Amino acid sequence: EYENNRDNLPYEIDGMVIKVNDIELQDRLGMTTHHPRWAMAYKFKARQATSKLRAVEYQVGRTGSVTPVAKIEPVPIGGVTVGSISLFNEDVIREKDLMIGDTVLVERAGDVIPYIVKSMAELRTGHELPIVFPKQCPVCNDELVKPLGEAVWRCVNLNCKAQVVERIIHFTSKDAMDIRGFGEANVRKFFELGFLADVPGIYRIPFDKIRTLEGFGEKSITNLQSAIENSKKQPLNRLIFGLGIRYVGETTAKVLAHSVKHLSDLATYTVEDLVKMEDVGPKVAGSIYEFFHNDDNIAILNELEALGLSLKNDRKSQSEKGNLGGQTFLFTGTLPTLKRSDAETMVEEQGGKILGSVSSKLNYLVVGDDAGSKLEKAKKINSVKIITEAEFLEMVNV
Image 1 (cartoon, rainbow, N blue to C red):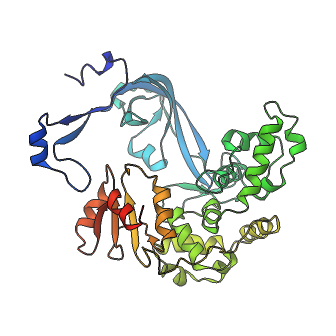
Image 2 (cartoon, rainbow, N blue to C red; image 1 turned 60 degrees about the vertical axis):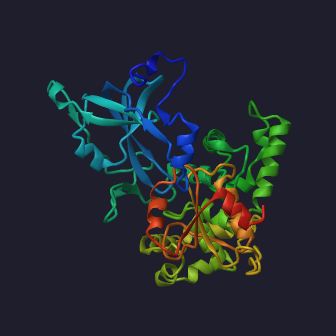
């Protein structure tokens, strides 16, 4: 009844939470480690609509991955007009048997992310055209390659303009160097105007020219200058993450930062050395090795250091005397009061270590709402202690 009536509500809903309406029964049912037994979430079926597939465009990411994007006739789904849908890779196009001109069934997964469920081949007229995946990069025209074991085609030209722009956007992002005032729109604008050509160029921005642009007053200029200067003091793990090394996320970046005295030390590591690090498997190790044995990448690192960024691990080793000294932690789900990044910082400041996955090396799994598969895996390992945010805060004396 509620699902059928959702379109008549004055607000959007994608599901319901059903609760036992009896306090005494709630008390008897109790709680699990991360949710009440007397409540259950019920997700409605995703909204669907049909449309026409008019074209496929191709986007190049910061690691060179080429992603096909379906352009459909704009169609409203759940209050949002959808006109573009990622097709992820060539295999998806083939698996779904998509053709230009097809009528397609479109859905918003979780009422958020649009995707094509299927082509409606029974409605074809014979005028549809096959989708031909490009052999050359749509931006720089270099030949695309498909690495063994991967589903995506890649442009391997590191100087491809699309990759350069995406690398700059990633480098300046909040989770990397956190240079506020840049943002994707400004990065693209500065690049198109020739004010910015690569990552080191961030620290050579011609502010005299930016002052002539509409929308850039003295206050915004001053704020941007300060943000750029402050980014030079970011810890090494943020710089490593900001470099956009394929497969290296925030957790692995911290592992790498803690393993060296200077970033250039990583160029001396073999793949075998890297695999011995926490949470670094063969694929990740190969990517790290490749990055630090590329002359262009080394030149960028040298330039960044010359521009005032520290490539040293200046972080003082956390003492084993801290409350969490030598203990390993992993956070999963949505915590009641803490941001995950803040909680991880608290662990490191108290001498603990953050892991990237559940394993026998994990001491504590801190669970929040919607904990998911990590919680289920942790329950099968007797040595892993499953705790709440409140219990974690007691451990760090907060």
